[in-house]
Length: 236
Image (cartoon, one colour):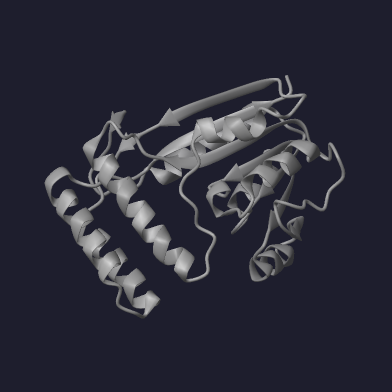
């Protein structure tokens, strides 16, 4: 763990480190699943990589196509690509949004010649402020799921390994956990929670009681931003 200035956001650092790890594999081609705003694609293309994106958001795909980026509308669980189409397949904060993570990993492995790299959030349960943050994360995702989103608990390295272990040609499974301990101001947490409750549009005493418990724990122990889990699944 590395101390970090109050109020600063570690997420861009994790994304940057993940990108450099992917580029360190020297891929000629890659598929970014859940490409979102295309930032990863643009950076990879700027490095000379033949990068392709996939997302379920039709409006995002149309915007990226208008920018001239090679992207497809589709689901991670049914990739519209032939076997071994890309050197690498990447998931950047995408895995916890998938309905069938096991199937998505199988599909990624099918179209990847060399390997799959995954970046996800992670909480260090040995740190009190991280335990509070994880509890809030689970509370928040409960509301998101009620609103129709696919927003699952963060996958663990052990959980993903269990999904990968049946793959006959699995060569290596490496992972690293990274935490820049960055405080999350309690006032910001409250505003975030209020916005979610407003979006839900109905009173739920159980949710309210759970939120008050989490906020009480946060006042005592603090609450901090999530860390990062990076996984490399490789054939070599």
